[in-house]
Length: 267
Image (cartoon, rainbow, N blue to C red):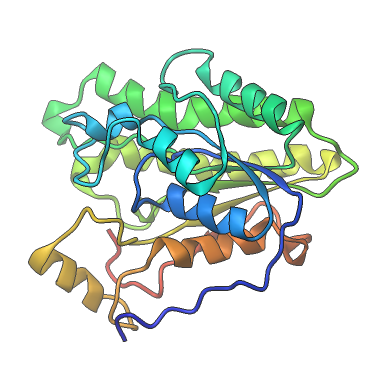
């Protein structure tokens, strides 16, 4: 079934003003989200931090210098100044800049993530803090900033990203797994307290997405874990995100949705 994909092009988001974070690699979920949302008629602002992807910790083969800037130009979307979300105050500035450049926001997709391997013997305070600051604190502060500027007469939506590690924790990614479990709590709590501002908050577990980080026998073995015999793709993830930001999802909030193709033994 490899190569058989159906993209949902029927959903329109004409005029929706959407901030998408984690746009820093050509084959990544963030870049695909920006492309698909723009094609659906949304006005898109993107943020990323290519320096992490290029670092030894990031270790992404598809990483490129200044990739967020290049993708923004290629996709004809609005660039938000690239920055490290681990630095105090940067998360709020991203939302504020996006809202200023787009004259407001009614949607936000927090796709950014920090993830570095370390077994329990090699945990450090810095290793743990980096995961919590980027994945959790930044998301919390961005949600606060978004809610402060939102127009409650509109249908507003926030999409967060968790990971399959909440089902089967990978030993070398404990700090990452803990931070992604926290995002589930954040989703449910934020949905509860922001409902009176007409803000829906949902969370996607995108499963194993083929973004160019896995190859060879391991790649083939993971493909076999899916009933369809293939990996998920960023387009699969974008289909769900488009739905969640459309009027079709107007009664859906506080939900964690696994878009993983029925993968068994998830990593």
